Image (tube, rainbow, N blue to C red; front, side, top):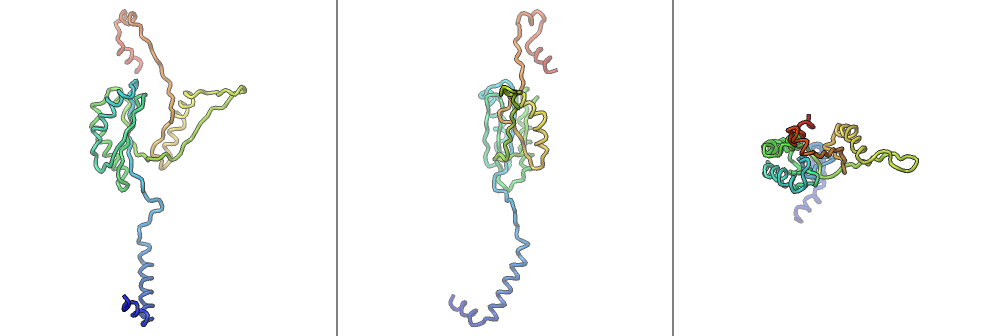
Length: 218
């Protein structure tokens, strides 16, 4: 080591030449280095969502979530997945992939697995459809909308109206913004109708509950 150092001390011209060569090589290599201003550090995620209308959490777990998870499990390059089933029949499954996996490729692979699982899902779930989207594990932005108040300080519109307004007029516009993967209404309220059937009058008209359901769907 001392011999190596003493060589450059005794020969300043050689030292200068080596320094210039190192600087030139560095200048040539700098433009070739891969640089990312925003490197992908988080996992690539794909979300699968479905709704089993009228089912509680346990029923949706058994009839929808378990079937989808069984088919999705083992998809190419998958690291892990986690799911959440709410008491209103909403099922959400998130599949995580390594950061280097292309989002579009991961989405297509998951979509193929979901397609294979669809024949085993309930008819109401297949009618609404199973959604497969590219997603991010973190929420980028939360927007809160509130109703105006009248002179007495009461809100002019209730939560159901505000939720329906956002669903019809705001949600689609947010989805069209470049870079937005998915949007969601937190605490969503939807208009619903509950119907009580009179067994005697239905029997007199020779109708079943399914006949009423079919008529409402039309």
